[in-house]
Length: 286
Figure 1 (cartoon, one colour):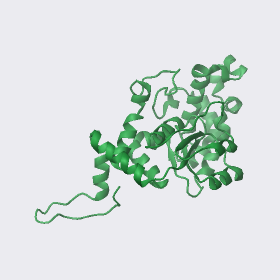
Figure 2 (cartoon, helix red, strand yellow):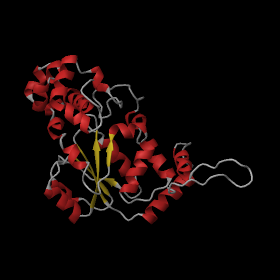
Figure 3 (tube, helix red, strand yellow):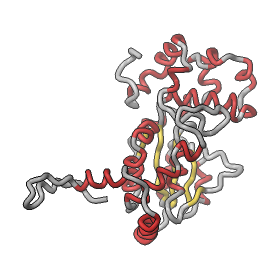
Figure 4 (cartoon, one colour):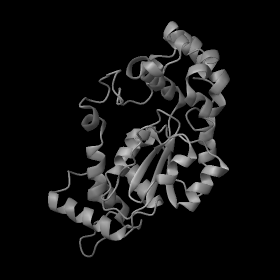
């Protein structure tokens, strides 16, 4: 992608030419790349980028699967096989090979950062509004994977489960969410929010790839985003819900449809500071 510059007016016609950044963004958001152009972009990626070990890390239900899908579509890359792995222990990364993408939910620790450095693993951290994370976890346990839900989960209503005093009993992401702030300060680890990906997946993927040290042409970035869209991965339009699908609904702010006023109040008291620190709220007046 060309570096930002302002090239000013063109010779003779007096019209201002768009900057190189504007042209690149325009290229990314235009029509799908022709096959020949895409193939050239793939070959250029293989030529310019040595294979790397990649970790996509997050608290569960934050957009990890989507981000892994995008990075796994890079030429020469594949998902690391996660059979019989939880993706929560640093030592699980020891078998990660160049050209593989690991789907992780690993808490920060000196041991983890030591493995990342020794194995030359490039990491990306994904986070999401904790309220939407709670809702996504709820549907994961109630509809998609009920065998993993604790016994009490099946005896309570959603209203009861979303009470602050109960959240920490069943929603592991609530316990781990403090780790988001740690990852935001780790040098060399690009951080991206689910909401930013939803707003501009092409731009955010291009930014992540650059931060990871990759050179990727606009045609390749655009193709990856198109092929990993909610519509392509789920077979449904955004907002069309399937509680039993890993791609349940694909929207931002769905918590507003599930939190009662009492749930919201309790959540503010327990997690309000975290929402402010992560930029999701400016104060407690929500």
